[in-house]
Length: 391
Image (tube, helix red, strand yellow):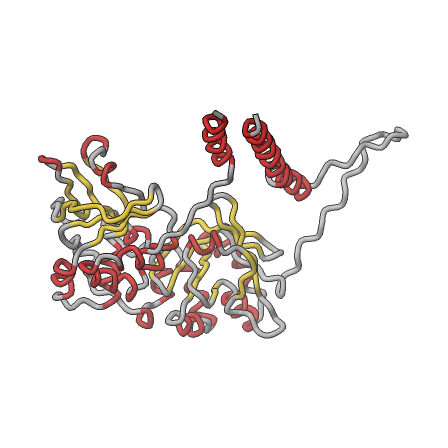
């Protein structure tokens, strides 16, 4: 009789426990299906596998070895193949059930090719349409509206984390199949100049810092680029720097490793820059506030406002301020305390908590306090269980 009450009680107790999400591994998922070995191999070769595994919500449109053969027969470079396969990685979750429940029968969804910044316009969007007889078609926006592939079956679904679906053919796109330069052939300043960072690119070229940026691309490089209006307003300060200080300031906007936006969001902390030289740290701190990523230098705080290019091993972000290193600029002085408002009364008014103290207090209330509340609930539930058990 006691078990009748214990089972639902233990189930409720289980629901009280904090949930955790586990990362996915696309290589491991596809390894169970030999017929997708070529597709799996090229996800690894082009570094797309790592990008997929870092995403929290993703849909992979896998094609079998026969379909991959038609792509490989085109003799495309590895970097161009990466663009084509990135069309098969949708930055949203689509399980088999959701495919057949699309509102109005058709939808456009962004692929990883669109999110890299390499796609022109909306050429990185994929059209998913319900067809007659229960079929679902897939096609890219720049493919003249043709749905050249259709849904075959679901291979793996972890709602709403990752879905791996088989489609019949490789998605064709003239934009994705266009010749793509390898990392060593990418011209950093040219890319920035075309995407609203021409003023910053011109400073890099004029200072001689371009060589340092270019030589770091092959091994991995993250660049934070202040937009043209930001650089224009900073020009009066910049011109007072010496030649070596200008180079240091510009190199301060580069990290000698590849850091996707998701990596920056999860790997908060101190980052060394290209300007770092022994005792001259030239570092800054990456912080995440919701969906915003900020760069804090102790002198100024800049926010990432967009992505110019994300093509591993190179990623370029737009930021809304010039990064000012403490090695070249003094940190702003703390503001003096506000005068007391007690007007001479014997009883002093209590100081208001600082913003940091407020944040810490909130964190305590939401964190440790929450855990204590959860602990009390669990202890109460266990007590009830023991009481019922010995009835």
